[in-house]
Image 1: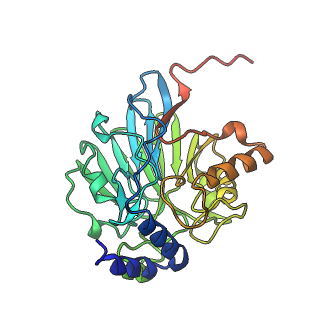
Image 2: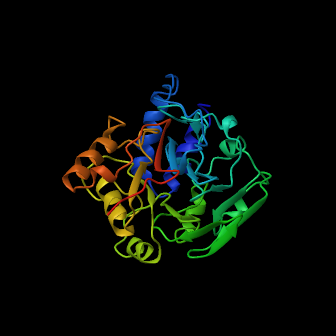
Image 3: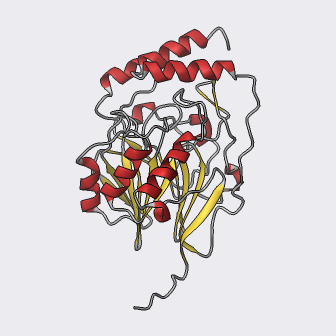
Length: 316
């Protein structure tokens, strides 16, 4: 492992995020022999029969979303390491063998922590795999019922699910050098619609002044799954990653009812000494902005029913 470490570092540096990638790599090598902490909770009942809309946070950018009788997973990450040497801080909050099925598996882009081949191997393959344009050439034959490669604003329908790729602001490539020609494609967000529900998954993104407002104009969103890291500063973030303030701005722009913060606490990016800094900053900012009661503030391995079935009767 140590012999290939210099090669892996060069790959990270070539990806275009050299400063934080070097910090992430260095810190991970320092703790390569440390144990991985157990998840704070464990999702033992992936399907909630009393839910119209439920969500569970598995860790990093992996969310398990239930819309009525449909199950969707985002950017599945179950392996103990990413790219061999980048270790998790905390185990995944779900044993994928407990999943009875998956109707759709969504991949936002090709970076190792979002398109994890070893994690996908552990999933049920009875549903569809949805990937961004340019990713098909990187995609092994996993055995899914169908694979759909979508361009921005392109939509597919499958068994009642409507999935639309929506533009975000990131970059792609998988092996560092290929990021040079995948700066403007190979990454996406998604809108998932089923019956009367709509969920936005932002993938990995920086803030853009118009993209998210346009998503909010086109869709009526019940839940937005938005990254809040790396980094727990009070700033908006960089061109390719939002910090908590930028995440809340996206939440407001898309006009969602609720927000699930993801992409924090699981991996060390080198920005904060405390991996919980992002969520602590988000809580403070959400309270300051009057949004605290609309944040689905759950820990790794926790699940939340957002809209119960049947819905409570609201009297005027």
